[in-house]
Length: 408
Image (cartoon, rainbow, N blue to C red):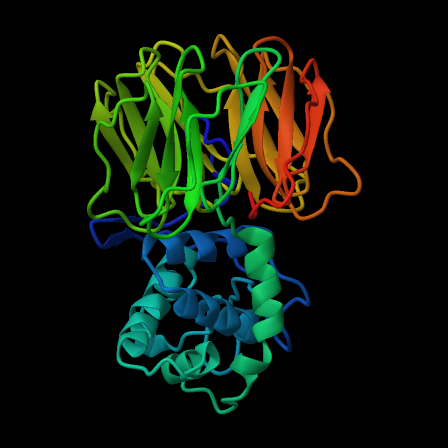
């Protein structure tokens, strides 16, 4: 996947109360606000931006509606949760009193959901030529209808910074081998076994891979939930009906007779002998980006793009929500005994928790973004970028980089 989805743990919130939407009902608790008169702050608030993104993903928006959401939020508040504004407008979308109570309009998830519901209705009845900005205008009914399309560049940059386009990655196989998979399903085996790849007829893009014990097989996962099994990897089901957002990560049980997949909205789907221990946690501050099984197979961790870690079953929580990262957190990898893990951001910042060792990060000269991290059997980890460059730290080997690959 954009990262080798590694399992995560217990919910650590961003320090801001988040509205939890459960079965369509909101638990309202207004989030912290800032004054926006005579003008909002010049830059986005990172926590608010992640909350807007996470709610849009939970609501299953199209790319056009996602862009409309960010264009509207940027134009109205610079992605800040405003306590005031023009007339009685409030919140990140500067919604009027007719949209709901003050608490509803200043609870970021609630306000975002309200905007998205209307935007999805407009999107469903709009021709392909209708722009995201025009959809935003139909929802907001602004006196300045051109401003939303004019914000497209900024909104796109924010989506690139705070969002994660999961697309395959890398996986350590023993101490001296690794395997890569691109988002079109190309397999690159480095001192490991090549058993096939680049299947036809898939939907979406490839987002993750998992190698069986002994390097005798592997599974590939697509964003639509399709599973492709090679070698001794058994096919145990796929499709994940009813998921919201892309399927972004895959993890397998120790005996290779079960696996779980994770959606961008935090839904977990279990197949074979894999247990379901929970999912869809409330209060997530970003989209979900990774999942990994514990060594026993009786638990897993979930990771969000805000660095939150949610632990289920026998997975231990060792920390999360790191401070100071500049781009979305894309991947996680546990230590061999499951008593620690590392997280990595798009820029290659590495955060170590539990018994995981920090060996370095933030490589210079990266082409693209860091999309995955994989812990070695010893004390090191391997990073891969969206252009296929590898960066080894600690005892992680460097064997080679793929050439002519589609993005990772």
